[in-house]
Image 1: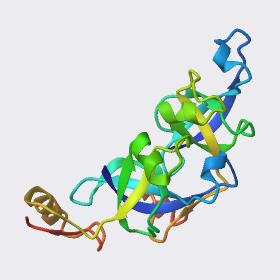
Image 2: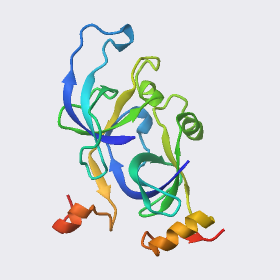
Image 3: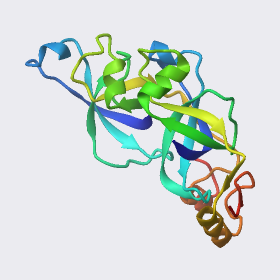
Length: 104
Length: 111
């Protein structure tokens, strides 16, 4: 699982039958300091509660389809949780944070 | 399986039901010398791993679901062990170059 920021929604009226009723969101994967990393993706929202701007975590590959009510759907990325907080443990700072002398 | 270091926890109240009651650990991936290999994973804890520990990460869905006894869970990544030591000549050589700059728990010995 990885962290991501929801940055948009996808509306598609014509879909393969398995995707009916599946909410699709555009996400930007993040590194563990919550900086964008890699390409933006379209992910299914398995919890039906994520929205733009939220910090979420997602699963990829076969596990994405497992997250859906019907596990035999053509879904390859799925949001499975909304992040309340990422708690860094003591001594864990990015170089940028050290320069600033503070935590994000 | 992969080596990782626990660097944080992810707190989430709204999640897929299979994640209820599970601890999510943010783990940096390590190479065998204990140096960050780049990248990270969010893994479900099964062993009670804590801050700064070097851990064994299972990153394969069928095995993960078997370990959890949850056949339909959308879970692929688990922390399945706490590493005491990594031995081997290459690992030790890499570690000596680092001169113990990583963390005390990755004690590396020559094979």
